[in-house]
Image (tube, rainbow, N blue to C red; front, top):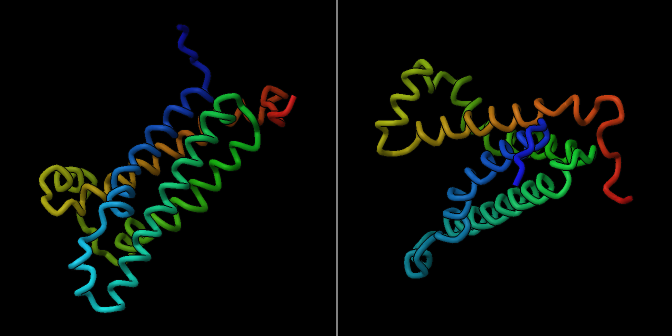
Length: 167
């Protein structure tokens, strides 16, 4: 088996790592939700919130699966429209839904006052996992942006990309 060294393949591997890193938290939100007896004891507003959180987890898992399918069905073959789909997943879903509320807003409000090295140290020693999840989202975003930027020449260079997957 020969390993391909083109930028679209490397980018596809980066997208796969980034997207698969999102599966465990979303799986926990979607399927490992709550005990039925404890759910019945909750106030109606908390029950609604719990149901919405379950639905959010399922929708996020669906977007991750769509991203993986697009990555390995067309992105690796340099089909041009798949780059735009991944652009929408990164900038239209990941940034406003995941990155903005957990990373940008706390930075803007001054809730995160530590240096990058202090953040990494806190992620290693944090029992609650807040610093770890904060750092994981930043690393995932950086991986996705690199995966988008890396094959730009292959997708939009001189006729090397495939315009359509249909022959």
